[in-house]
Length: 209
Image (cartoon, rainbow, N blue to C red; front, side):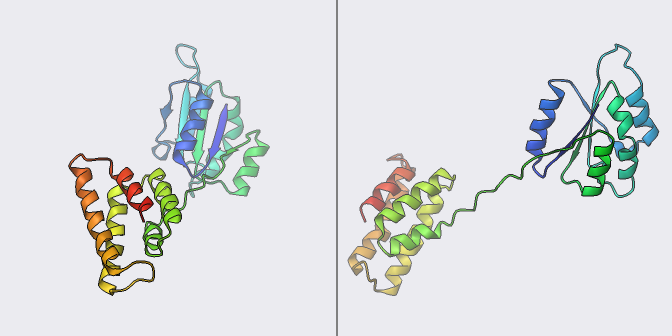
């Protein structure tokens, strides 16, 4: 039997491979160093114990020199008592159609949508405009996405010092700006002295804007 798994995400391909093999032990063939006849022999030769063997070939079908040889072998692999799993990051229409004629229906995995990277400076902008609710929502979103609280604290302190250096703000008095900068330094050090979780201390700081 021949299976073809197509997908850019190696982890997703691995999950599908394990589902197909259903706990069968497998050998990943170094097909680049093997003659096509060797693979044909593997497909047609019963194991000494009469059990089903499994083989995995990664990138073979898209190989510019030998890909067509593997596709030509597809009908024989489909009739094999053993399992051959081909993994590809992508598969063009021509080889896909050729496999279909041999009775192989490639499994095309859905593309994994990557989360947009979080912009920590958005929290700093909310601090600048004294948008308490916006800053709180952004802080919680950042923490959920795994942004280190130390990173957030550093950016907020940079923004506070920048506003102090500017000497004026539409939303804060100068003493308030100095207080913001001092408070951020204090909560950073407090968290490292064991006085509380830095994420929670930042949340309390923002709610006090």
